[in-house]
Length: 289
Image 1 (cartoon, rainbow, N blue to C red):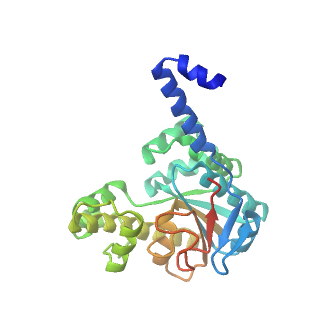
Image 2: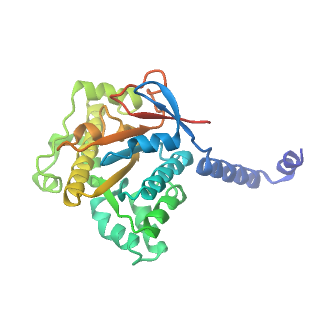
Image 3: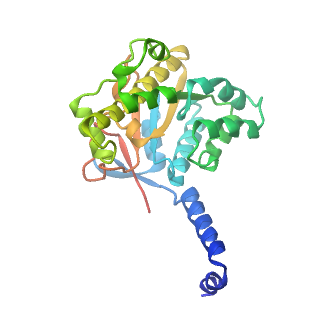
């Protein structure tokens, strides 16, 4: 009752700011995720059992909704558990492009102050607050775990989203891994419509956006392959949006060379406990919110 009286007697703009702060803190902290659906046999398991099961793979994909604090907390728990097992870790992140790699290396080596790295983050992933990933960054720095920038160059992704992959110039193609092809199938278009039906106002526009997403998947897959080939002892935890790490239509389906991987996904349209399959993920998180 006291809180209600406070809001009644507080100027409207201050009450609104207080509400925004509360909502931000709620999103930031969220509620801990403690259980997951093991898709293979539809059993519900505790998070430590899930981590133990996936820990033998070279690549562990842990998907997220970018603004969900509970997903980032779960990602950190995965990293901490694998580190405790003695795994030689790397963290692959959708949030950074390869051009950010010198800054990422300097930060995890403790050679630059946090304030400088925050500026790199703000330029790379401008719409999600630093605080969402801060604990992951601090864990990487404290334990000297490399962070690997995976994403395709932003200007090329935007160019493809506007005009399609076929419109890229030779100079633009030269910025991509050799042989990169981001053309999409009808199956992939159906996949895109399933989780993001609002993209694209017409068929051509929708296809261009689908090609831009595919470009990101292919480039991230090539970056993962290259990094792990150069360091055979590494285990990479890949942190990216759920649609990018889904087994169907995501980065895993673009991997080459027989790298072993496991996939942990949060629920996301159209996936839920009732319809998720082994093609989508190994585990689907059970959210308590």
